[in-house]
Amino acid sequence: MSVFEGLRFRRVYSPIHNLDPRIKFVYVCAIFVAAIIFWELLPLIILFLIQIPFVLLAGVKREWLRSMRGAAFLATVIFLTNFIFSFIGAGYIVTTKNVENAVAMTLRFIVLVESFSVFFLTTSPDHLGLALEQTHIPYEFCFAFTTAVRFVPVLAEEAQTIMDAQKARGLELERGNFLKRIRNYIPILIPLIVGSIRRSLELAEAMESRAWGATKNRTNLYVLKMHRGDFVLIVIAVGILATAIYIRLFFGIPSLNELLGSLF
Amino acid sequence: MIEVKDVYFTYPNGVDALKGVSLTIKNGEFVAIMGENGAGKTTLVKHFNGLLKPTNGSVLVDGVDTRKVSVATLARKVGLVFQNPDHQLFSETVEEEIAFALKNFGFREKVIKKRITWALNLLGLAQYRKTSPFMLSGGERKRVALVSVLAWNPKILILDEPTIGQDYQQKENLRQFIMQMKAQKRTIIIVTHDVEFVAECNPRVLLMREGRIVTDGDAQTVLTNPEILTHASVVPPQIAQIFIRLSDLGLPKNVIDVYEAREILFNILEEHAK
Image 1 (spheres, chains in turn red, brown):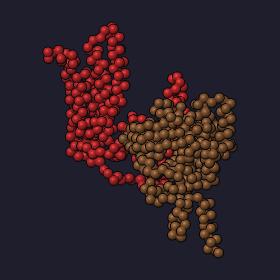
Image 2 (cartoon, rainbow over the protein chains, first blue to last red):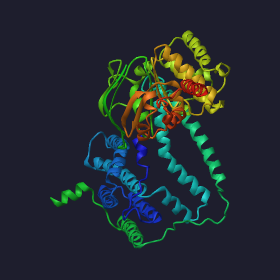
Image 3 (tube, chains in turn yellow, purple):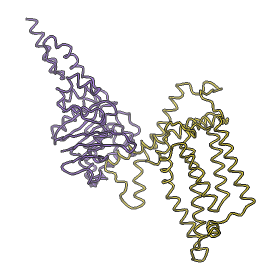
């Protein structure tokens, strides 16, 4: 269940946490686009390194490393499939170009995960909901979204309790063949789903009894305002995107192998 | 027999739930674990069937270290009924719910049928045999959960908050049932906040506070001592409160039993009448 631990937001204050989530999202999108338009290793390495100062500034190094470790399995799969197919395509020989391409594809995935994890690690669900609301998305949708995010850790905890309760009745999750193992999860899924439905009905009733939707024009206690840091970030984001497109259009990017070859 | 030797437990999120607990529960003993919320009561009982393994120290069940055997092996001997029945009910009928554990433990079909009938009759659930557990009331669901554990007849029975949501009649049934189990020399451990229920059952009482056992003694001694009770955020039972206030009349302070209390008060009144 430690996977969901990353979603449990802790209220921390850092220059990154205080940034406007909308601008942070623009930044993430800029990185996203930049990572997609390059398939060479060199710019992807740069994109990967650019984000490390953000992680350090936000003080979320430990959580960030954990989510990177979580991505390790998929990254390995991506590397292996890319490598094996180019290996077959090149006529069963290993070339440095093939290896470099496979590494680049893997790194592209890691850059995407990295930028999203920085965003989610430094943005509270409340902040996110606020951002959605102030971009004029109907409040019902914003509320549903923030509630869903907020209940993920609760659900994870409940799944753990249910697992314990069924283990105490002799359920062995790791026993049997593949199909049996999937079936072993039925006694865990049913109470979890029933519980979630029951909880959402209770939540709806509780909200109704507290006059949900009584006023048409909602106002917020906190209003998102752009500060100096936000303008700096938007300049950085636009800068990265413009540079990336410019380089893509007008420069040939040397492979790492050629670059190292020309140096020595 | 359960032997807990200097157990420390820290949850993965860094919360120290147990800070050096040592304790021995002999066969046939009836123990109530009490204390404020977050004192570590549930964490402690989850060690008894191996769901949690101590970070430091050891837990032995009948001489076997809980770290060395699977939860399923221990569960056959140690039945743990969780506080919230909704965390375990999943079958289409009450009958299948009870059969689930029996199948897991490899009972034969014929034995399973017999056990289900026996278990349903124990707590007056026979008419719900073919009902969906989700259609039952909260109190009934709780009894189904209890019965589904009783069905395999574990040697040690642990009940986490068994009296929540039960009306007085059902509580009395539960108490009678526990007394019956006790007479059969079965080990029973209950985790509870229900001080009146404990006073009526008169078990050995363990008071916990902040991950430690602060008091260990029989109910009559522990539940009539306001200082140690306050320390563990427990309120004395009503009878004990009356007798503590009446102590300036020369009445004994350590009374928790209603019948004993009545006896003492009758004697006093008769003396005054003369």
